Length: 348
Image (cartoon, rainbow, N blue to C red; front, side, top):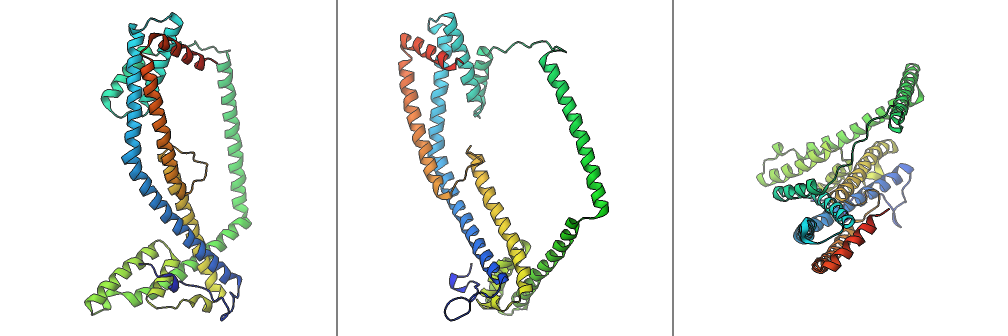
């Protein structure tokens, strides 16, 4: 169980204590606050997605299935009409054939039922007219385009080889970037050692094998599981909070740390913050991908439920409109006008 807010790590501040004394302390406070905010956002996303998925399955999917069923019924009606059920001129009949093929192809994209897929495939084969294949022309635009693409590909390969040779030469000479990378590697090792030191302190205090009391052994076993999980994920803040929880340190522990140690801590916390931010983005991107949303727009968890309500209202309106249209299509004169309207909408 996470510690209560009153037992969280903090830097001394307020009237009875000095303000943070160094940039390292200020950065520590900023990082811990931003980590808490990202965790809260992750929890908000988890709750919003759970509620969304539940209503999506219970309410939206049946509504969407009804909408597809109405389209399939309309497609069957149009098939009968195109097969002689309605008297149409040659141009209107051709337009109707194209419309049936387009509808069948569109419905196939989201159809899972094998029998219905077979039916839609049959309609597509029946009404689709494949475009004739034009013979290849060595002097035609396609051939010219192929030659241009081949030349561009060769140029790209040559440029890539030149870049590779340039990078190899720079590697032989050594660069400031490599030196900086070595320094960063050394800092990462020091940061890792700082995390390991906290971990060892916790293990020393919580190892259940050293506890004779059965109830206390169970408590320490549960705490050790949390310690091991936090250490495996390199989550320094969690380890420090566990130290606080078992009173191995007090809430103002950070004030007594030197800037060098805080610098190592801050590096770990900065990496943890980046991981949390990436996790939030991944959760949002996965949700958008599953529901066909714009991958580039920002979406807040609080707006997820509103979006589903909007989509369901749109589906209700579309179903009513489709049901009314289907009734009107039974009239031959209306049907002919409808086909001509569809033809005009498809015209360039």
